[in-house]
Image (cartoon, rainbow, N blue to C red; front, side):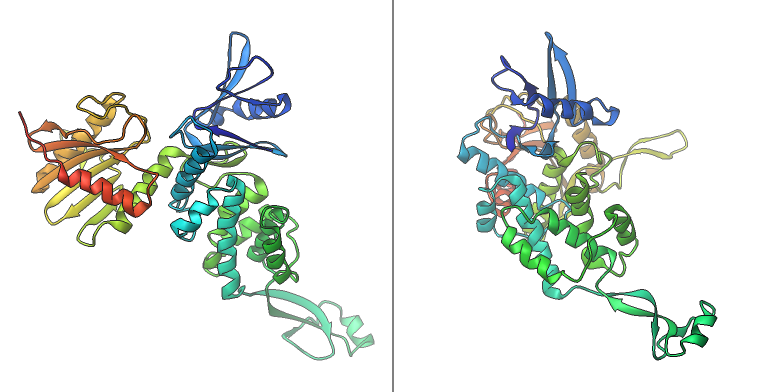
Length: 429
């Protein structure tokens, strides 16, 4: 069974619960509670008791959360509170677009038409389709082989004789020569992991396709211990570079653990991602791909520092999310997954820390540039649909507040963002 929720949702159980909360069976709720009580789980899931009622609060994470062996929760971006089929499909499409930008998953780009169709599937099935797309590409190239040691008896010499192993047996059966050699085989750790992952999907929406792929792997045995195979496979990256994308999927499909994303790894069972991380990567990748060639886009660059000590040594390195250059012009952009409000001159829910941080960026970059523009990029919502007129820290440092329309394709989103950034000019009063 699959439930629907959004980031920052409340989860509870029993009767007389908050109508806005997700109500689970008691056993599933208690299972999640056990995870939430771990010290490292608080960013994702927080347990509390208010007025005698226990509840769980989901953090700013999206993806899949496994409540029990047969019950999962699909956590969607909080861009709407409406759970109509149309709104759910739209939110899922936003999530899939952002997942395509996750470096660890190494997903193949998907045309917008196909991605829109996948958004009509429940998230586990949509993710399975993206996984199978990578499998198809790997099988189409042909599964690579690797050398494995073989010790056996043959009527002829192949490789090396193992005379020290059983000299008495050799005198009694001279036709059985103990030999040792290496042979190429498809039975190696990466292929065993691939087969084990496919087995996990054999009863899903793409069961027929999975059976076809498993048939092509029939000669490969299942792993005896997938964790040992995963550890061994990660040590063979030079030999099996085409399999690197498989490691995080194996962590999830076989062990229920999320891929390594920052420091928040393996907090809870499922495939969960910090929404800020997804949004930041999605906007950066989209700008890099769809801005014209004369724009140079860099991410997390750090040529400047905030402070210098008495000896002139730099401290506190500045690291903006995005820096875009065209000639001597520079745009310093920070992406924030926060819900701001206001479409006129008044914009609320702005964090002062974000404003101070961007000001520090602007002052440093203004030292070596002809023109610097600063911008905070937020997700577009019903409460923040249009960019207000630019603000200004100082006459030479305009500040833009821009809504990123995630309902659009990445190309159109970038076009709209950049039109808003270049068409608006600040006029000091």
